[in-house]
Image (cartoon, rainbow, N blue to C red; front, side, top):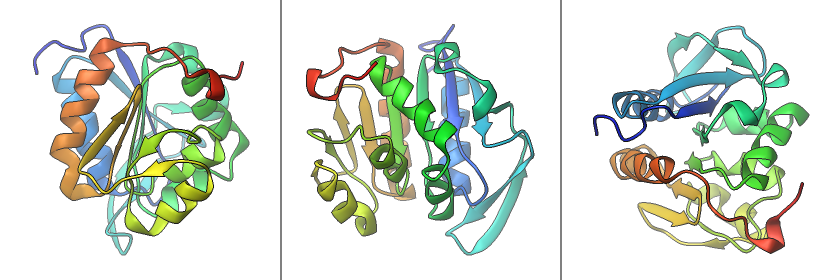
Amino acid sequence: MANELEGRTVAILATNGVEQVELTQPRDVLREAGARVDVVSLSTDPIQAMNGDIDKGEIFDVDQSVGEVSSRNYDALVLPGGTINPDTLRADANAVAFVQAFAAAGKPIGAICHGPWTLIEADVVAGRTLTSFPSIRTDLRNAGATVVDEEVVCDEALVTSRNPHDLDAFCAKLVEEFAEGRHPVKEAGATA
């Protein structure tokens, strides 16, 4: 994975409570593959990562505020988990609109663990096949998704995984999908 993503720019949307390894491993793998990766958050204040939702991890600098950046500046999006992170993001109108813009443009999105909560709020899971952390699978089904229990699932431009144990497969699939670029948007989910 040396230069597959050369010239690509990826946003990782995260805030306080992000599961540290779900931020760092995708970021590092994508950078190793040649992508420029920005951490985008609700503000430009540093964010506190967590390990297993219980233990404080490292504090990470933020590159861009979601309210001041456009999805047009990025080729792909990653939504890491942790329970608090996506629960906070899905309550923020700018974060939800950011996710919706990637989906509407057919740009690849990766979401792991609790990350699909933000996809639900963005109303982009109906008719799609996904996986997630077990505790949010009912939420996905209620939003119209087909949910499977697999290490990594790719439904067109949407890559999902269950938990940190799936990170190797998740990251490999992100590189593959992000290298391919845009995908056609399903008519049922297309919004402008």
